[in-house]
Image (cartoon, rainbow, N blue to C red; front, top):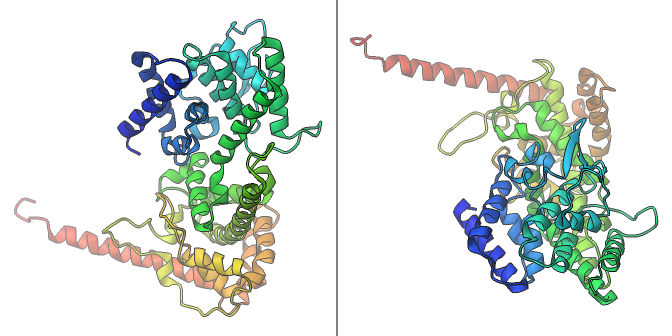
Length: 471
């Protein structure tokens, strides 16, 4: 999204929502807030958590939801490699860094600020608490900025509701030790705030606040329930470079670096359960909608598990082969450079023989994954092909029934429990209709020879073009 378009849309959302809740805000005070949001959401490493994402999450006419969505991903320490400088000035008075961790200041050190206190109470956090990157750190700091920045324009009741929406976007939570869901815990926190601050809410008002928060939080993760698994994987591929920064350079990242990114995502997808992705609270969403979300998510996760498992096997084989050259070999050395429009470059796939499928897909899931590998996801990414020619070659050679055994061996190799050459001697890599290791090895050699030939031709052309008189 164009920066100017993103800024103007953000500004319009801020002005319209604040006006609807309270009173028309002074434009000169709102413009810096819009700039702050757009700058944070267009950081160097932002590929998925961008302005487009916050507008999608805020996709309703409810001004509380719109405002919460604008702020909910403002802080993302793992993606931004820290806290954006423009953002940090709003929260630097409340936090400190100790031993690489972000810590809320002790009670005696904390400024008396209602906006920050709202965030503390809604999240159930305490002064002096160490923030956990995977248990609300980013969401809490984003909410604290929202409540502090918006406090001159909105009453406490609206600020609590906004913070509640952002709290609900803490992802993938189970029940608490007390047996409460995340939504029920949020309800308890809001009831406590209402009692202590005499906000005058009824129990139905509290329920409505949590229902709104659940509605927004479910939109935040709605890509998990996309009806098309290829689109779900597209979003997954946009997430990879946000926390694997070396992937930004399409031709400079290493085989090992790419493998680490696939390995982390494969482990995460295998851990995840649909019930931890979407929430339901007091009829929000209704049973039919909720079950549809769960079913679509379950299908997408199953597809992603098999797809990523095969991708991990493939990159493990390539990494084991790369050890014959060195420990930090660029992936372009083995597979060829990432294609550019109008530029013809040799690629490993050109040197892989066509093979028939000896073991065709046995299920609809396997057929879908084979199509995703061979034909590709729906969109190209800036750092990776949308299709997977080497993975397609391997799965055509061994069949889906061998994935489990090969994945176990690949993970043993990657964990250092199996030497690279021992992994390459695995019977499934050697005894199929084609020797996978030997074929890939020959392909890499032929790729290198082709690139050397292209270099020689380019050098000859440059030599022929030199003007001998000027020399």
